[in-house]
Every structure is written in C-alpha cells, then in structure tokens.
Amino acid sequence: MLIRERAVRVPVEGVQLRIAAATGRLVNISATGALVRATEPLTPNFEYPIYLDLPADRVRLTGRVMRSSSAPSEEHMLKREDYLVAVNFTVVPPIARAAVARLCGAAFTQRKYYVAANKFQASAPGEASGLPR
Image (tube, rainbow, N blue to C red; front, side):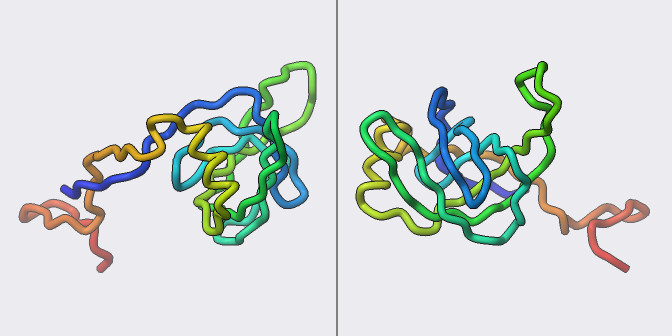
C-alpha cells in the first residue's frame, strides 16, 4: 500500500481553451494540471501550448499530456467525438499562475492524500504476483 498526494481538483464551467490545434474547454483544474474536453486527440508525453480564454484576458501556459482518451460528445446533436485530455502544467508564467490560482480558489494550495495500489506488492505463496516472470 502506498500513500500518494496530489493537488486538489476543482470543477470548472465556461472556460474555453486552445491546446495545440484542438479547441476545447476545462472540465477541472488544479495547481498542477487540468482535465480538458478537446476536439482532437493529443499525443501522451508531448508538451503543447495551452491558451485559456478567461473573461479578462487570454492566458498562455504549457502542459504535458498524461493521457488522451475518446469520450462521447456532450452535444448529442453533433456527430463528432470528443477527447478527455489530462495535462500536467510544465511552464506556468506568473500571469498564468495567478489565473490558475483564481480558478482554483482556496484549493490552489490544498493537497489530497490517497491510497494507491502497489503493482509490485509481494504476494502470499500460491498467489500470482505483480512481478513479471
């Protein structure tokens, strides 16, 4: 059993964005990253510029794609596919940091602890282990 920590995620509505060639919107955000609903799949482990369209201005930062998966479109009338893209922020200029802090509110400095399964945990005799043979 491993205890892990991560930044607290905050649901966000109404924030449009551009990431690489895709348009999209924020689903949730934390001090360290975001989940984005995008119009295009993005390649994991690649870094892309992200432009958040906020009411006061457009903010630029950079994020590394952690995962990108197909998701049904929320707009049932459209016959297009959306993608849920998880990004970790890698370059956050001061203006972008302030904008992310405003979107996160009090959660910007909060951490969440959780229990993660250990893939390589020892097993009892006769049980399959997580280690390759």
